[in-house]
Structures are given as C-alpha cells and as structure tokens.
Length: 74
Image: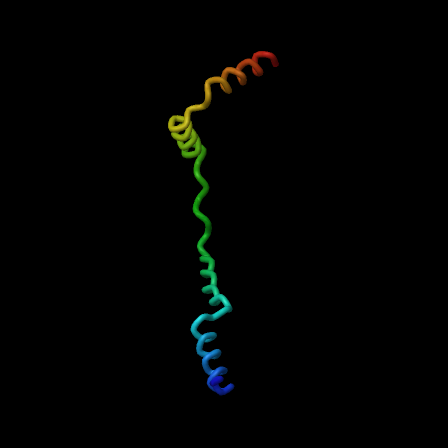
C-alpha cells in the first residue's frame, strides 16, 4: 500500500532537514586592527638575515663561477 502524500512529504522534509544542501555561512572576517604596522627591519637586520639564509642554503659553486666569468668579461 502506498503511503499517504502527507506522510511522504513529511519524510521528505525530515530527510532534507537532516542534510542541508546549502553550505553553512562563513564566519565574518576578523576586524582589522587600527594599530600602525610594525617598524620596518633595519638594514643591519636585513643583512644579518641574508647572511643566515645563505649559510643555511649555500649558493651553487657552478653558478658562482659562471657569474664571476660574466663579471670578468665586462
């Protein structure tokens, strides 16, 4: 026996309410602070970080040799 239309629509509504097809709304983006940006890094700090980066990641000797050759040709 086929269920009554009323019962069918209730079952459909129940299944739809369990699994929403619309994605939940994203939370609002955090408000930007009104504080000024941090002070820019000084030249000494930049140089120091560059030296540390190079020490951790030494340049390829082939590239260095090619650069020196190019500089000598100039």
